[in-house]
Image 1 (cartoon, rainbow, N blue to C red):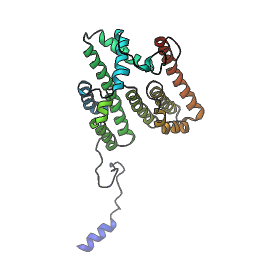
Image 2 (spheres, one colour; image 1 turned 45 degrees about the vertical axis):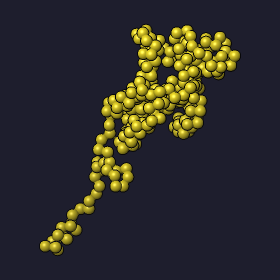
Image 3 (tube, rainbow, N blue to C red; image 1 turned 180 degrees about the vertical axis):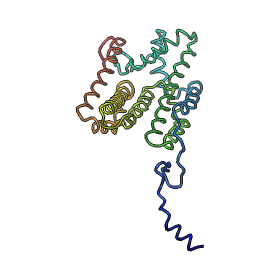
Image 4 (spheres, rainbow, N blue to C red; image 1 turned 90 degrees about the horizontal axis):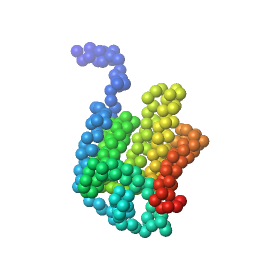
Length: 274
């Protein structure tokens, strides 16, 4: 019987790994059997961000006096002024506040209480962050693996820093949102829906890189200029993928589309070009 078993084992074809079987990203760990979609990733993030908008304190004096007070001035015609907003110096841009003032003015037309308008602005910031975080996690699931995407989602969901930063009225928080959008677009550039090399796929890749460059420019010009250092790897990859000429053209176009309205808003409020 043992000899017969050996002959059958010798005659059997060698076992080859199933190409369709999911592979583990690391030895000893089971792979994630599915990749969660945006509809599954978004609701927990929305719940946490809305709770943060209602419960998290303002921990930065700059947020109170350099952004909430000038926003109150834009809405109601009065508010405290710091020296950075003095027309003598003109160090702060009103363009960042003008974006939020548009939503706050709409909210104030519906909500009578100033506290309600304050909370509405924070809730809008939190919801925006939740959507961008969920999109980034979903793209990571598709671009890397389900394990990586869910790990990123869990870290964002449980991060104390994100709980505060997502609802803060600060340019650095706006820059953070732009990074989330830019990194999502960057991964989109590596996931064309059509076969690589075809003209539609090439247009899709160029469009994704253009969106990533635009969001980096928005974060730098309207948020925090040091974002350009963080975006250096994206810039290098875009130059390699698009070529230097196309990269420079898209960067200049994004800068012009953002700098012109920003200069117009600041010129209106400061009464001069700053």
